[in-house]
Amino acid sequence: MKSHYKLIFALALIIFASACSKDFLEVDPIGKMSVDQFYKTDEDATKAIMATYDILQWMNARDWNSAYLVKTFPSDESNVGGGDAGDQPPYQELGVYTYGPSNAPITAVWQSNYFGIYRANLVLTNVKDDSDLKKQILAEAKFLRAYYYFEIVSMFGHGPLILDELAPSEYSQPFADAAAIYAQVEKDLNEAIAGLPLKSQYAEHDKFRASKGTAQALLGKALLYQEKYADAAAAFEGVISSGEYALQENFSTLFLQESEFGIESLFEASWVTSSGYDWGTFQWGGNRAMENNITWQLTGPRGDYFVPGTTGLIGGWGFNYPHNAAYQVFVNAGDTVRKPASILSLADLRARGGDWTNESSWGWDGCIRVKYGTRMDETNGESGAVPELNYGTNLRLIRYADVLLMAAEANHKAGNNSLAATYLNQVRQRAKLPPFTGDIMQAIKTERQLELVFEGVRFLDLIRWGDAPTVLGPFGFVAGKHELFPIPQDEIRNNSKAVQNNGY
Image 1 (cartoon, rainbow, N blue to C red):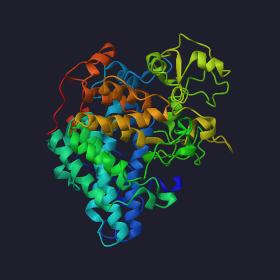
Image 2: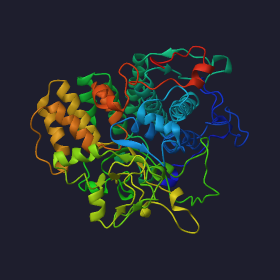
Image 3: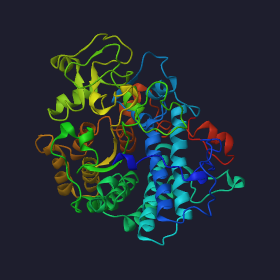
Image 4: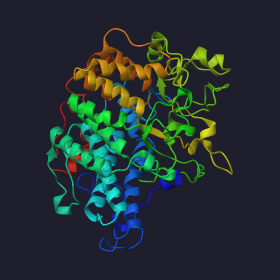
């Protein structure tokens, strides 16, 4: 299964030369085949689309430059953590809003998405629709280009809108505004929906690939972010009525390897444990393929102070410590199903025979994270492999519970509170909570906070709801500035037509 989701450079042509990052990812070409010779066969097209998917691995597991953490650290869910205030300053900046255009993780997010766009453009420019498989691959490329552009527009607000390969003379591209980028995202997704198979039509080893439902869900999300609520509700309804997805009954195993690509999964970034890296062979450096997710090791409870007991976790490097306030949200909701699968208090840890030996350690706020935890049984310590370097747990990028909650929000905003309540209560029922009472929008917000904690969605939720100044102000969030990340300084320097965001 996961072995199909490897980095496959499409020979010499999968080398980055886009407008936005001319110096990015300088690698030696693999082979000497020209573009004219490549892209002829189904096999060629498959290699090219695999290289486009691979960016999902790489952008979220780049050592010290993870897109997942860039979307997580500015939220109210966790402290950045680490060893001390000087441990990885670019990450520390994200937690207190002192970052600027030279912040390395933010720059990496920009570069990674445009690299993905570049690879999708290569497929769309060069692959002919002369076989059924190639037609499907073209639809996948349109979905992936839309995904990467959605990441750009939701985090940066604007950027170059590039739909073709560019000559060196074309490297300085004007910035398209959010409306233009969203319009392209919608166009690509509608065309992808028409050409993608259902999830059930994929062979087991191809379940990682985008399906019709994946594209419908992302279309609904893009429409929701634009406040096109009726259209968003219709897109989500396509996913819900398809019968292809359902809530997994057992929440406690939902984020374990055994549930990857399961009934609740619409889209995942996937890694493997089988590379068997040790300290000498691990591929450190931002330009390398990331077949294992080092981010999980970075964000495990710091091994200097962590006694695991029966948690199944092992020590990590201490980033992404949960706020105690996040734990209290579960307590206040009476949520005893999702809490133990998401977050543990010190009392919970000690009840499992574990402990934390330094309550004054940097970033510690009385809790450890279980969701996406450093599980010994989901890494590889065999034959000299170092467990810290071989985590294979997938990152769930789109899952059905999120679709239901976004559908609830879209329907509420479109005036259909009955259907909104139905979808909201489906998610609550899985958590063994009673039907909601009171303000339905506030109930949706709280439910998203509980259901999707530590999944990298909270920060952007707070921004689009307009709640960020109130909720994040105590951490340093400034209204009118931090709704968007800064355009990286590399882009400003290399692109004479680049436009910096307000406040930077």
